[in-house]
Image (cartoon, rainbow, N blue to C red; front, top):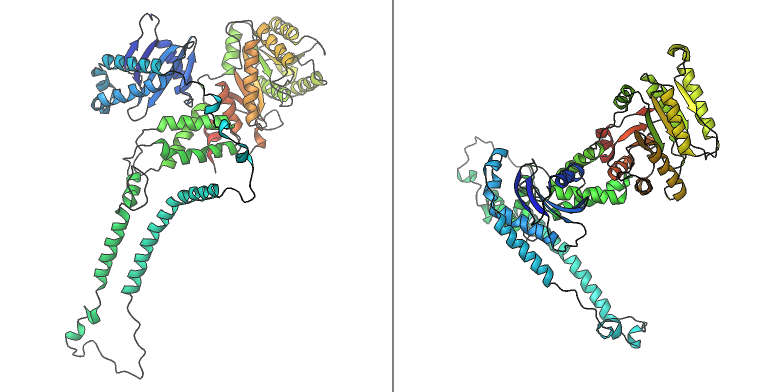
Length: 585
């Protein structure tokens, strides 16, 4: 049933592996795809991954830095896999705990992990349990709660049901029980301290009735007058201090002190949480993760993605031993920051200047297509990128393929005129550095783009920028036309232009744009979105969550960030600055 099972360290050392009977294909490709696409990209919110015909499930062991991966055909429904991978993890840890505690890659390589017999026994038990588990039979109407209802039970009385009220009060009392025990505990300590202070306080001396003669220190007083201990039956201050310390110690370390089940109560538990011997559990992290989730949503990160990020951090930290004198909150926050930086620095880096020079060596133009919804600033940012390319010494041809919106061609013509005025043809051998290729309105956008690319090849232009009409992700005819334009012309780069003001909508836009490009493509490997241009970034202050949402959904980098209305207002994304703004309270 299983194709393979492998156990390897986070450093890449394979400790043990199993391959199913009759499986000849290597599992290296699926596991490498899992590492690249999920583990390295901090996308561990979901423990399953699909690669071609295989479905992979994995589990992280953060204490020993191990990864357990199981693979099987995705057409199969194996209900026992989740419990099986947990059982394998527990048995492998228990059996080879001493070997795993030895740090260093060489020590792991020298050890032999003979786990096959135990693994086959666990697999056999899991399969037998799954077969024995029969589906629950459907209840008859007489067995349901609805059949027990009578007309009398449906009539609401004026006073209401007293038993329900009593039950409700009982539930409320049980909820308050924990708080009351804690309050009683601390009130006891305060009461003891109050008794000590009132008992140890010396009475005020009576006011003298008349003038008393002064007694000098060297006036020959007897030694009895100098002995102040045990006067009038009072105990000394030192004894009272000792008694108080003993009482407080007994309260702090007594079994009646408020504590969580299985933990240490009082001061010892607090110290244990600081000195670094504590391993993180899901219960410890849950309050902190809940606050982090709400914080990310408030910073414009999509709600689903916030939950997935926090779940990924929880899986990454669960079972990990905390550092010395570090709190749970600081550990979780640091792990979340590292994950966000990793998400904003995806596996694929887009270097347009390098790619344009490579296209020049092949004597062809480099083609960039811009797509996105209405009103996000596609034409404006296309003009900014044109200016940036001209500043770097390249010639640009703009293809006006927005044949739907009135004024779209005129807007591009205005940008062309302004750019040529900033870079006069006289400084470039009498040839305009930017030209516009347009055929008017109501024409086929894919045909205009094809003609523009052919014209650029003949006229030796370095870059072709294809402007497309804005379209909502739910407009099927326009999405089909966009997919056709990309499938026919095969641009080198497809940039999605989105605004930084959106939250949950960014997820919907990108998912549906990618889905439309995949559905309407004629190729087995369709062209999807290659990068993102994030506009209106100067209007959002520190609510930069849209950058996280867009990058997390597509796995593609943010190539440019629009920060204003002039041609110079185009920046590359600084991942650490964005994460700093995102985590700022």
